Image (cartoon, rainbow, N blue to C red; front, side, top):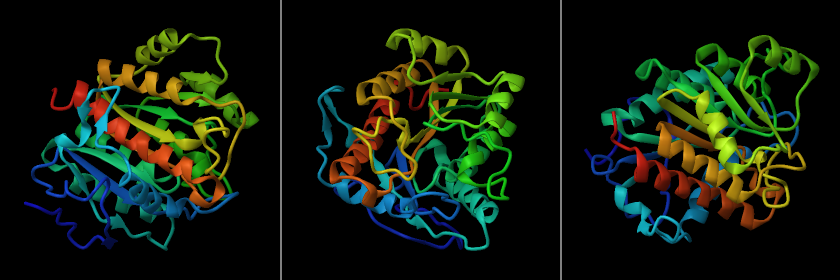
Length: 299
């Protein structure tokens, strides 16, 4: 089979990297673009993130110096963009859950590119059904633990709260939260690494790994990065993580756990420089490389 049969899920399509790695059956990875930002509360524009990342990815080298190999050799299939559901985020989450399920058949790793952080809920729902012990590593400048925000329990400010109701979650990079969220973190004893942290890179990884199960879904909101290197987000927060800090944590997690899926979300291309879009595309490329290098195909 060279294409995914989305069986009635509305969609349209472009290719990650140079477009030559487009055979579904022969690919280990599926990139799933979801241009959705209907619950954004400050700066809109993350709906344009997936296409911008895909366009920028065509200028990336397939070869990665750090890993000393051609990352694209694992086969990277780009699925069609999932069309937004205008009836509301709950319906969109249902649609995403279905699309991720169709994309991950035969054990393929799905990399979702958003779009706002709400898209993560649908992906986590699917993988929890497949891997009962699933846990989520959640990199974000914001706690996203409000029970509801702007009268909705399904918006971008409640994503981590909904995930916590599905499976264990570990948050890293948080530097903004409400009183309600702070109290919830304490009452539920949610593992969270606030930023900046006094932990060394090695100690950070050890701390995070202690709270993660064997099967892990990784969710990366680009605002976890410091705005000096990632200003193309809707809700930037100062004093964030730097490129190597994020990469070292991700590589440690992929080496010690089985990452079954991941997402990179919240890129708003118009809010920053072109370099931010390339950084986001490189991060997707890195995640494919790390996962395929260390644990893809393990049981």
